[in-house]
Image (cartoon, rainbow, N blue to C red; front, side, top):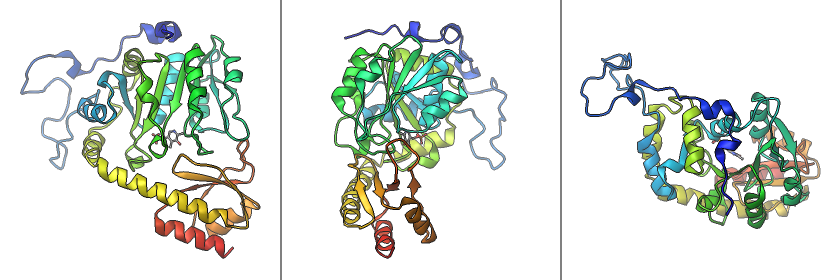
Length: 349
Ligand SMILES: *Cc1c(COP(=O)(O)O)cnc(C)c1O
């Protein structure tokens, strides 16, 4: 197994910086009176308890997630959505106007956006037309400036899981960070890459509570990686990146794992049902196999279908402009009733 020198990959300024030290970081022991952080001692104006700064390292919440995912707390970073974790990776590893990341279009749009806001270059190594990784082509771009490869599996917008052997080879041979974005892993029939963290010190796994767990509004993204990488994330994040209200609400919802499983199973059943119904439709040219909670569907006349559905109060995502997605609409699996209304509308088209 290859051991990475994370320090050699990090930006110098990040390696050298001292993190912000909050008032509560600077004492140890028991205390009853907290007059160290310039908070209001009475409470919020409605007497609620939000007067105190939240735990910057979200330990209570992390302990719950750690138990669910079977990963040490020190290998877990929580952010304001996966988007925050993605942004921090750029801050940690990419010198503006010098370093790049590798992405594999068609893929999730935030890698490119985050690269642009951080002044990093983007090197594109497209997926094949049936959405598979070209590992050889990525490895040809393995240079010191190409710091991070982002692979999204199951992939958005295509919906398929990327080949595990291909990802494994990338992890073993690429001399930089390999990010596997598993936003949709709960809908795929395979173990998470989290289980391989001890095998690859350059592996970063992203997951989110926005999809299967139904908490998109609460903004909670999870990053799993080596202790060294997580320590860097904790050092450079904003001190109070998750507010206390969200930490409490999420911790309570995480006790409802059985209900989450039930919803996932229903979505999987509906995914198959929608797949079968759409296959019979005359304006459907192809439905791509999906390991996610959506279907990528190629239509004969996508623009007209999109507008027609919108007139019927149904909004889908037009992905026609993405590489290899000509003519494609991306349809999220809804409730049974919502899917019935979609099928009915299409049948009346
Ligand atoms: C939806 C999605 C996410 C989740 O982002 P959050 O910021 O956690 O809501 C991450 N990656 C991909 C590929 C997604 O489609």
